[in-house]
Image (cartoon, rainbow, N blue to C red; front, side, top):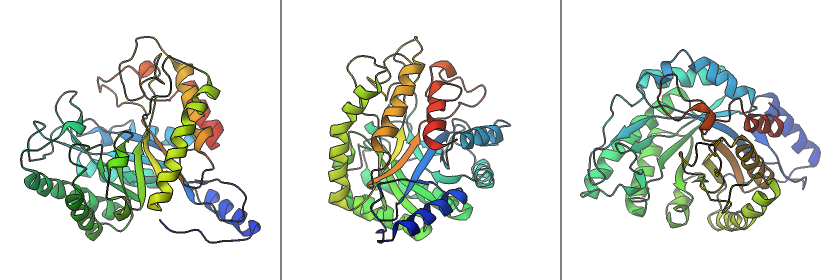
Length: 344
């Protein structure tokens, strides 16, 4: 993490204005004479098939993302392994093509958006990637380094501003030595900002944060026992979490980025933000309340590096959750919250 320098308030205000005029990420924080750190205003545009990033919908999705006030977009090329105990990773027809990924990064930059590339490893069906526990860990990490450096090279070649070295791999993320070697290898290929996207129940177990630039957390904390649209109640639920995160950021001298956060527009989304299939009842107001509570809780905290919301629209014919029940805020009250909070 780069330390901020003490500056006069007028200089800090001018720096903020320059960043905003250049289309950079937002900068917010108390007026204490220090120049605020940049804060990510991001939305993820995932891929589920080889041709997704070449879809005719791609340009429209990027325009719509930018219209919310977002200044970042995250792309998620995915490789797979057949079983949780396998030691080899491989691309499939569900892996976005390299050519398509390169093109959409160029399109995002042309649209004024910064880019994070966040490669995923998945298992067939609905098996959680956190359950990956290879029989041969050494062979798995060799395969993983081949996978992650492939995308580190692509990130470097396309000028992507940020890169995640892993996502929610709780079954193997405790191996500090293997991850330190992996991060060192990635840094040989890519010079930009690095993070790891730990699940909300995983981040305290990671022992390689000092080797990275940001602490990344997929922020799916349950906030309520029963469905609620009460923003004040949700903010109260965030308070003890925010206190713990502030102490954690200070301990590691790294800012905390919410590499993912999201809520389906279903009744009960605040009780289990990580779940896709809570209810067949729409919950647009609950989703919007959750968006507002998160942004109102964390915006302005100097240790917080921002959020990348999961996720924008699914691709046409993807066969995923219907849009009215899905994580996307598009066309819902949650999108209005983003526009209000982000100035879209």
